[in-house]
Image (cartoon, one colour):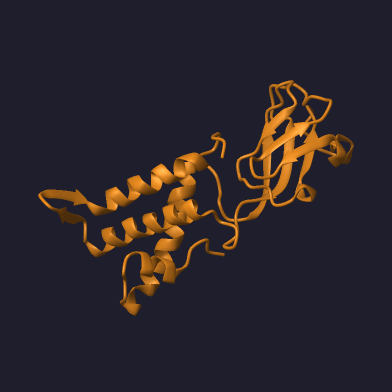
Length: 186
């Protein structure tokens, strides 16, 4: 599933050549991969399993926001790391902030441990219909940077200035992606 489409990229950069569609298709995946590496998280909706460190507190923050529904979350707290049904925390005991990826253990704490004793299974990430406009624009900028690198159209002039077009697009994309980096709050 793509978070951005070929027509969106072609419109953004005024690309009219149909023979570039195959290249752009490849670049869509490359741009998404680059964004995910930069942010330390995944963007496309999928089921994820994270193993987190219990610190004696009541709050966990997962990486691949937003969580699609509270029903899709299973949290286990087990210092022995067996994660059996007897260590599953009842959904009624969890307060889940879907967009922020915050899970609070109401009236209790996650066991403090030196091992990753908390297992969280959830569905998170975006679909084409739910991807925020700024994330979509950042991905389009990354595709543009990769496209211009492939086509050798690196330098552009603006008055007396000469700029590296792919680097400018990548910098703009990274500025937009900063709020999606793992550990930052949306």
